[in-house]
Every structure is written in C-alpha cells, then in structure tokens.
Length: 93
Image (tube, rainbow, N blue to C red; front, side):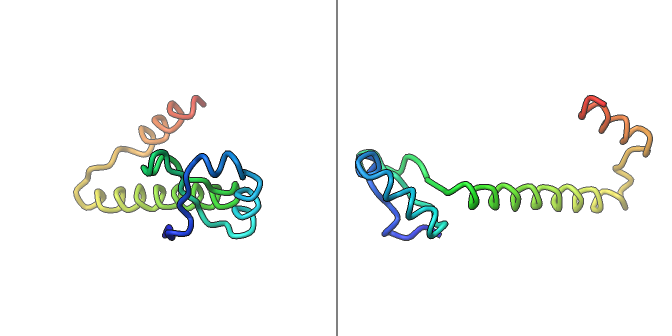
C-alpha cells in the first residue's frame, strides 16, 4: 500500500536522488513520482522488486495448476506425450 508521504514530484527526485535511493534501501517501500501532479512511475529497490516478481511467478504457477486440476474432470487435458512435446517446443528443447 502506498502512503501519501511516499508521493513526490519527479523534479524533487532529480534534485535529491541520493536521498531517495538511501530511503528506498532502508525502508524497502515504493515511492511514486509524479509529473504535473499525475502519477507517472513507481520506484522500488531491487530486493523488493525481485520479491514482487517471485510472488507473481508463484501466483501464475498456482493459477496454472488450479486450471489444470479444474479441467481434469471434464477431460479437457491432453495426452502426456503430447503435453511434454508442447513443453519441449515451448522451451526449444
């Protein structure tokens, strides 16, 4: 969740980028940069960004597994050999 104290004009970031980078590293909280009062981008430290990417990938995996499980009773699947061939093609193996 973004807090009002973490919304700043991009011009302030340009002038004081070291302060922003230090704060990002210390808190791990995102900061919103605005242009003419309109949110334009979000700054994150690398560790927080990687954690977010990892969580997203886990959610995608769980969603794919749940979709596959939901399709099993309806016989919406494909034969194992065909499924593995599709995976090999997708991964260029």
